Length: 303
Image 1: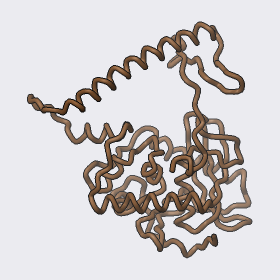
Image 2: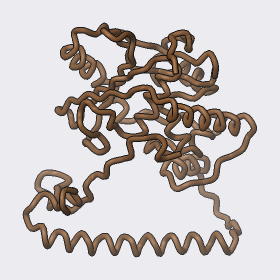
Image 3: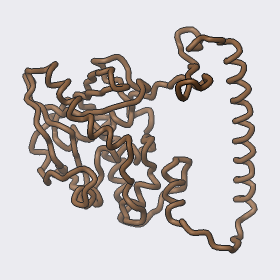
Image 4: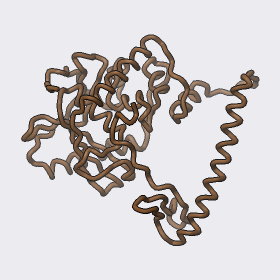
């Protein structure tokens, strides 16, 4: 498929999180949102995003992780620039697709080098969970969806992702245009926007943001009762019982691993890391926690 710069039109440049920024995104779908549409985002659910688009839930509040990412972004850009003097790096702004005006892109930077224009996306991460070998396209699947979305809007073929992990581990990855994956994103995005327009509310799911939005709708407590169905009562009681059983089983398994591991930091099975012993703070007793599980690298796996 031929990629063309004329695929997008420039909308403007708005501070992240500003009223103008939210206004542009309210009637469109951004790169960081398409993963939520597909059920891939750890930060947003389809349910919570749908209600935000309709103005029935407040925008996600700023948090320490978001602020840290913004503060560190210029430093990561500088790291990329130092390693790649062959690229001209500039801020991007907000664009939308000419073919699908609801499709919005807010890339961190646009870079121009020997092979033409590319997207540069900047990330920070606490751990290497989901990040593969540097130089590959093995990035967390929700970030893959984001950069493919940007490439689709802008009519470009290549995105470079620079990430700073744990404050010290700088890595770079390359994601190239994939027509099959992008078609999945387009169809999912168009269907989602149709449901927003026609008021077809998504089902309640297990995502934390879904529960959070519903809690925010009802901050008060009235001294009254509400009748629920026998099925709802049974479902809730079964979930509570299953949760307790799972917690008990996890504690037992963690104790068994702690006994076997002794003072070791990691437990492995073949080449796979299974668990890690670490302390929450200096002086605290170590706990056994699960090793990060690598996320799928392809959008098709979630479709």
